[in-house]
Length: 326
Image (cartoon, rainbow, N blue to C red; front, side, top):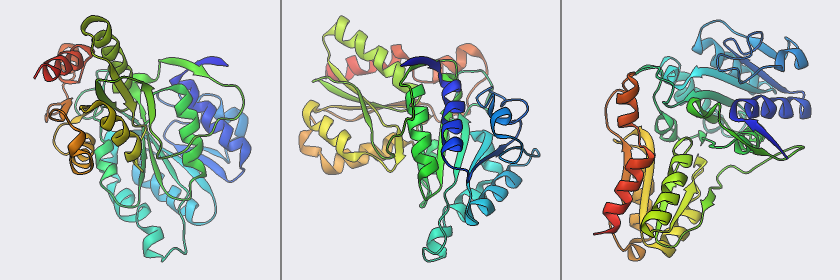
């Protein structure tokens, strides 16, 4: 067991899969010689060489176009789009091409392709470089959508994504890159579509994703120590496929559901989970479902304003207390 950062875990995960399978290649802007704009791919060029680790032009369309073609002809590409906001530049390739190739070829062509991207707020990059856009990808049939919260999950889930026969959008949270966690030695693999119960409790279920998971965990400790509210915290990890069983099982035991979402409130992933729980576990609910989200606004760059709009430990804590008092 060793302690590494979230960014180091990304490089370790890619290296693990490239050592295991010669068909895995990696491409993107500044991923090779510079080691990535977030320094999450340091050392890969030196180990695997320029045939398998390739810097690309500043063109999201070129990156994904090359990756789609490579995947269709037998390789397993990992493509990096520097900021998830830039999906808007290459959305046709994501939503109309890679997501539909298996279906439109009647299963004759699979597309083992991973698109890594830096997502979310926390580094003061403003409205065009700080968005949480996982719900953009979640709504497209044919895509799998993953967002890890710990270094261990970065490795295990990226390994599962690379080995999957279908396209996976892999959201790494830029606000977590410097965070640290324990990681087992040796090869690590995981399973897509399996949530993790990060904390067990009896009074409420808090469902969170990526950078909101550590905030939900801190809030849960405050709720228990200061207010006697014992909350389960579920790390969703995978939005598509979604682990409905774990979420429904927890709500069935606690009777209360709170979602903590960094994405803007309108059409966020928590709305889908709320809908599922309302349909499948209505009789178990002892109070209304509560969503804790970022408002439906462009994300501000100013430190105080960004901190104000993104769900915080204090807001999670206060919202749960108020709701549980009803």
